[in-house]
Image (cartoon, rainbow, N blue to C red):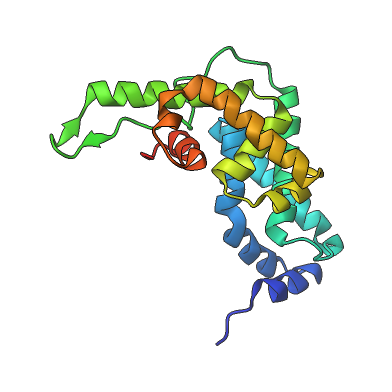
Length: 206
């Protein structure tokens, strides 16, 4: 039996088939959640944002005209939901120790146990990145999340955020400049700044 492609699932969802929409949800849930967690830095809020994103998408799926990719449309909804959450939230002064963007201590494969010094250094770096993201303006943060963390092309990011590609390019340049001031050596050591930022944000080594 041939599996229906995304276009077929969209058309079926437009006719009110919840099962088809559920399959679309599963196809895009990971990316939407990653977008929300980087925007909000809080698991509970991110999960609520994902739920709200897909609820809004379900209510509006019959108006999806296909001029943009479904992923672009979902990113746009998720960014808007996340920005609304940020507006309601009281500002915090520093990244919380339970911030999901700060990874758990990793085991040292050479020792078979946690390396406290490395774990502390890594946590400090990731905490600095989380704080740096939180300190960016909403438009810069959304651009960083989409382009540098999610790997969305600048053209698609411009569609998501409703601005020109030139504006996205400037925001990426400005965000990198500000993040470099905070992350310093970590970015300088990497030939790919986007990979370095993504590695720091997700707990991977660049």
